[in-house]
Length: 241
Image (cartoon, rainbow, N blue to C red; front, side, top):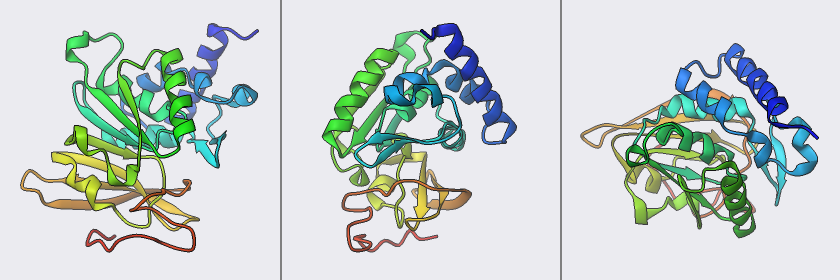
């Protein structure tokens, strides 16, 4: 049976690959990737592929994102210890765990911890993510809720950082509204076949700056501000690329 040393070596190789690809260089992000046991967030039948830089199916038509993409999102977000983060599209819970390691580092005193709120529209995935986060030791730093993540999560707003793990046709205005001044949102924007990681920065005066990063391929965001069957069911927004 494979043990902690085996997985730690696999994780180290994964981090080196992510670094070599230029997807992350921030030491804090690389350290978070090294700490979070990704094999606890993948279905058992894919455990031998847990540290390959590739997405893996987790059921219900969803995937756990490739480690390199999770790293890139974290790099672009640059969340700081003590901050509040909203993670849209919990999936397996892996991205939430990486973000939790950045805002509430394992070695830091609990009173200095930030927190991650993670919202998932599929109830069964939310329950599975809670189990994964509990086993991996992050359940006290991540709160998983069920709901339409394209609308954000108003009860705990505003957030310093918002990460979206599914593709949208345009930038959902509720997510921008739920950012603090100086906050940052990272979301894949495009069509169903190719997107770009898009960064939204909210100025202290409420102004918004938008810029694009690497091309990616994510499953579609569902809900009011995501994709719907039969086309884009997106309400008109002035925040376009």
